[in-house]
Image (cartoon, rainbow, N blue to C red):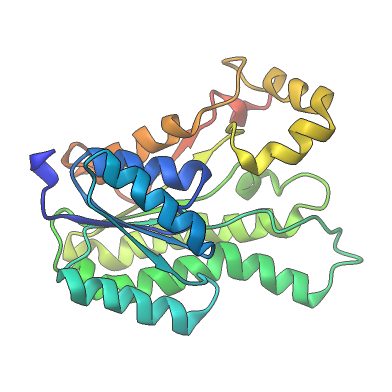
Length: 254
């Protein structure tokens, strides 16, 4: 753990699912982890869980789609610690389903804000503090939907994630001169609460999902966290502008 002692990692949307496992893994790696979320009770509970494992952790409650909240809170974090070494833009989601003909502008903007605006707001605010970090890096989340445009009603989700894929590479170009690396992970179907509804209401559909995955099973949040851990580490010091698929071969569409 000592190799990352004093380093700070900020993880958005980290009160559950993949985000919490990422925070836990980075904490185990020795980082001070700062979790973001919008459910304060869940956030404080998660902090206690991490502290019970000897991880130094803190929670900041703010909405990643709100520019002012993101900027002020990232500034508070950066000023408190004097640096940010890792920013994990984990927050995001489907936001619901809507075909384009019936799609409201409000829905369109909400999904784009959750998945793309959040990355821009958090990254922009963190850059001055990433410049003060060591082997600093930003890690974003895209999706297979960025390439295949998503399933029925998920077209704007796919569009937003395609934006994340592009902004990852654009940020990597923009920040290379400062030695700041920017990469993305693209999780496949991971067994998290994100899929809880369909798992409980349509188990037969859920069961068929693994048939589209080469390795024949769903992923676990810890398997995403291990790749994020690698991308944040010195072992990945010559990797930037990349997207790593974590889907057991699902992207091949068997």
